[in-house]
Length: 171
Image (cartoon, rainbow, N blue to C red; front, side, top):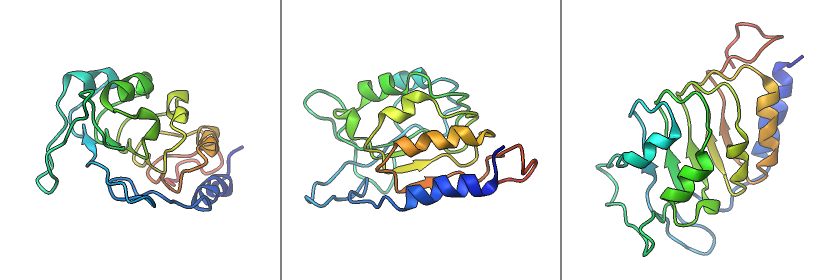
């Protein structure tokens, strides 16, 4: 049975990995990254719908630039505040949007309807920041999968109802 301390163990192991690259900023080699591709608040029900959408413009950020391949040079993707029930096809979508999909460092999946951690998410080995708060993840074993993301240094899980031992308590 999952306990709150088990979830804390996963979160603690994430905190102890340390970050060397700041998504949307600079890394130790002073490489500047583009602002995030922002597909938040679009009522998306599948990730495939992103392909037909334009990313939201940020009033504080410069215009998104594309590489020679026509893809984004960003390392960040925001898909928060939608109604996504799963992450099926995440690798495919990221591959279509980003010039270097294996370099994604920040992913915001908060406030969706996610109930589990799909294996597609675990393919992003350079992921450093992952927002999963405000979803519907109940099973602690789903959170355990995140141990495979060894570069993860920031993880949010609050607003998910972990069961069974702490039934009803929001972590």
